[in-house]
Length: 332
Image (cartoon, rainbow, N blue to C red):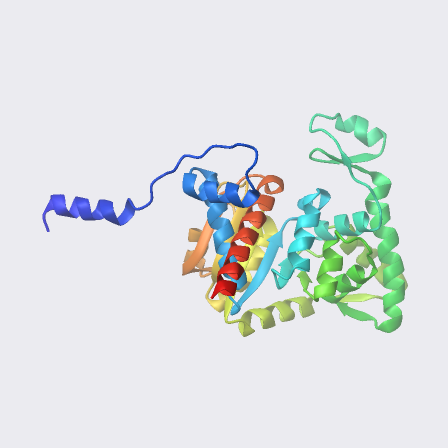
């Protein structure tokens, strides 16, 4: 093949879709906006649209076991309601997260209020008046540790009467059973019998309460049962997919177990971490391919940005696609 023909053929193989301009009138629906993101493409707009498309395909794939992985800081924000909604509506089959998720969900689910703050507040002043700061969120001291302690101790006293030894995910279902807040992640997981796995179970107020009360109340937590349950899920599933929000232990535990099934078939990362420092949190799906944690043939995308802004857009996008798919199916 002549060099000129090779160049032309190579161009045709990649220059397939043109960038399209769009305008905003203020009357567009979220579905229209995500459609425009896909047409406009650059830069993260195209990634948000692709994330919505991958998740919609994953949700519709009945052969795929779907994991939602996220970090606990998000549960201190109003995004908690969106995450609970994803579970309540049955889009995911399991959760892998941090102990902070449980802490914030129990505290807020018990009626404790969190407040709007500012990044620039004087932290020495906040400490003096007994207010915690999480970014630009303010949490009165009594609304966090004390709220989790009160809830947990009462629950442990009730549960030890039934049996002494509990798995971690069973314990979290029992917590969800006792929460009346419709925006509670634990409540949604309990109602749907979705297991929540905390690889860092003791890295938070709830886990600490298990330790502090174990000698007096006698309750025991068998975390090996959680890992056995997770192994059972992985080995019995035909395919695996995950929406992974943030990094750290919740991200790694998700892809770590996926390697025993030759990797995830679908993977959407939503993160603010970068890969240049070699961190797990910033590592792209292509790096996970080298470890066997994501399949080379999998459908993947990395979306960079704040989850409190971008996750609702991604969720709106994939729900729009699902509605269209159901409409098309109804027509046929």
